[in-house]
Length: 184
Image (cartoon, rainbow, N blue to C red; front, side, top):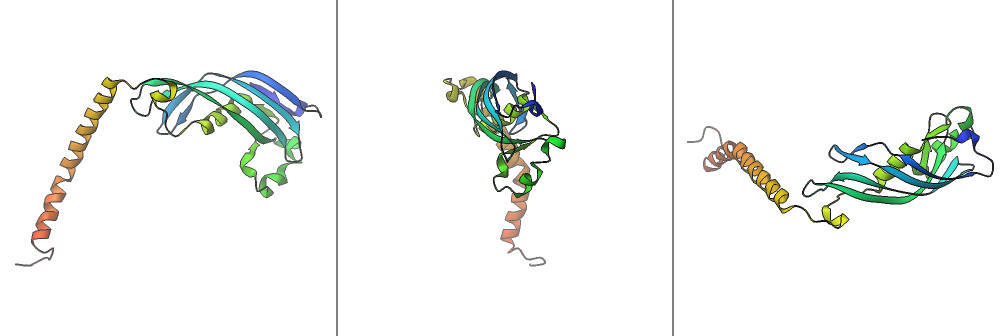
């Protein structure tokens, strides 16, 4: 959903909207499937840019970090940032972007239209915890999946040991010979 901030009234604007949030890659190339998000924000002009404050909430679908099952995970959080429009509308704010020590909360956009779905996608990405497991949503990891993954881990460890076996034998031979070349 696009919102044109050039039409923002001097008194600001209250938005209570549902926006479609695009899917995105997260962590180890896992895709997070996003649903519609409820966004409630107030927009107003300030000397730093267009201040956007409020809250969002949605549900995302992602994989459990332990058993890899797909989970529906609720995500909600506060939004507080300063939108810096581009073009003629943004000329009054450009100097702030470089000089502001709090620039982490600046949200530059190329023109005067802001994609609210992208704004929420970024906020969802920031709000997700490092790891999500079935227990986080009141579930339990599948025992079969955990056993299958444990079997894969054992096979991987055996393959790793096999790859390094020759190097280990070489190191042992060096250790017996004192590690010196040409010694008898």
